[in-house]
Length: 221
Image (cartoon, rainbow, N blue to C red):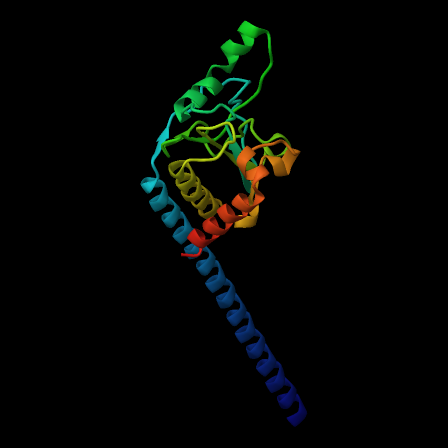
């Protein structure tokens, strides 16, 4: 009879220990979930604040098969930097070129596909051409999982003005925070296809490294 009582006592003891362990495990999981949600909300609030401070205007392209197909963008895994390759043009002119591609192609009998999510002007203004939830025709095989940024420039060498460069850092920082990216996820068009784009950053890799370092410094502030 004594042995049965001991066995019953031990079973109750282990049952209580198991229950306690389960409660602790569930509590830990809930705390982890709460922490992750709070972190995401905090990042979103920071991104929203940054967005309001950017010199940005939204001027979306019309839906068309040559520059804005309306195709949903998969999970964003990177940011791709480009240059416009047409010196002394501004952001809105490049935006309008993308928007007019259906007419241009019809007139010339061509099938050019091109666009970008954002275009940064020589004066640092940013024009958003495509929602970040849709693809742009900018980065070839990476169109489906990246956000593209076109940068205007004054000279053929593609070197950015201080205003354009500053806006590029701020916009890249915003996109990294918004989509949970790191600086290693920021690449050049050249890194996708070997194309000489953005020209100055390809021909001056030290300048590209400096841009990434300055963007990293902004992110850790």
